[in-house]
Image (cartoon, rainbow over all chains, first blue to last red; front, side, top):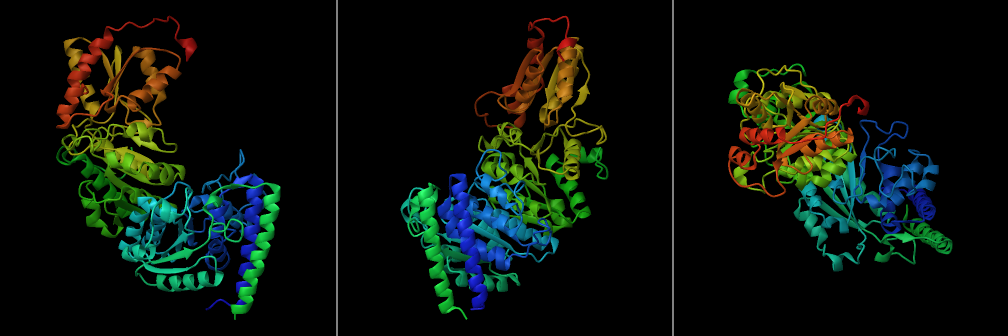
Length: 292
Length: 336
């Protein structure tokens, strides 16, 4: 493991702050896609605070790494990440989802600074990412493209068209994540529409596929480090399947598909905040024990 | 006229319209390293041969996957490329409709869609390959400029204009050869400005694409046989539509017929009707196009004859509308 204990702890602290801010944003908005936001939040944290080569002062910098949130409904977590990073005024979060806001339930790349693609309609991000990665090759640029899809989202056939393109052109400069939280709106993925054996499918589509715990900061960093190393040569692209929990960090809802979209009253807000603190304490304890 | 890319009369008569697209794009791609051609297994059918000859590394084939083609194009455009996507118009407008809407138009990216085999120009392929609803679909998409060139010269002009202007374009061209409308490429093409191809004062026929030639032939015939003065407007840009030319036609001729190789619902006829109605002044009005049903199978010229959008159909419609009554108003100036 390349991740040092100090950095690990710092990333856990940031992830915790962003979880709290996501919960707060959900409260301000009255409701939100809290389940899928929390499951992908650890990935967002490590990308925006360790890996993405971006400039807050120059958001449209030509050579920046690209990040595409194909599961656009996770904007409830993505918007806090972008505001906390400095791309947008954090005050904007108080208007999330409200009339007249620049921040709707799904982020508009022409309104919210730092967003590389307007997503929300599922099954679009992979092809867009293939396009930005192909453009890097054509324009002679070294930037990387990161894209994350939901797992239920993979029911949209367009994803598989995009996977074929990423493989055909050996776009190892495009790193694909699948947030495997195993939940859809109507129930568990395997009940609504079977996805397994997902890793075999991705491997069959030509990907160098790894499965990790997507809510573990250390495993995320190890997998991304390896994917970046592979990206230096034109070769089979990497897919990192993130085994996650919907609603990760909040004990009462973690792993429950019912938390896809939730309204929050004050009492629930306070309870979930306490559970986030408890979860953070456990995360710190693990980092202290296993970190080096 | 967009400068730099000149085609001659031999090109017009010996080169299919889509091939002129390929030649125009080959010129552009040699000039600008950011330009990319993308296709979904239709490089040959959409005439990218000239582009493949000069710059194969910037021709991206995504296989039979139109949704992917649009997403890839959007990503490329976002990263600084200028993608030209080409595919059959039936699929560019319908198979990838969500991607056209969200990835291209909503994000307002600088991508150019070349929709070939438009209308019933691939008539023998049947309704799966007819595109008689694409103007209705694309016209409703914000940010998108929609152009229907009438011949090869106009196709070259439209492609050049799409390159020179930033933003998404949808250019709808036919399969194979089009009847030649213009003698030269330099006739004053301008996006959003109709071109009068036959002057007249009794009635105005507003047409697009392959119907413009048919309308002009009808106008010539009616001038000689019926003594009618028929104005013909080539409304090559469906959006933004030339409101001034339409209102002038209402004022000057008080009779309008629209003609298109497209459904009478939602296309050129509807676009013109909206302008006429919003202008607050009625006139005798008729839409020619495919009625609300799927088109028959056959050669395009046979289909056009059957649905009445060839010169014979236009002549009959003009005679009918010339008999129509409409409410006279002595003072038109106060209403415009």
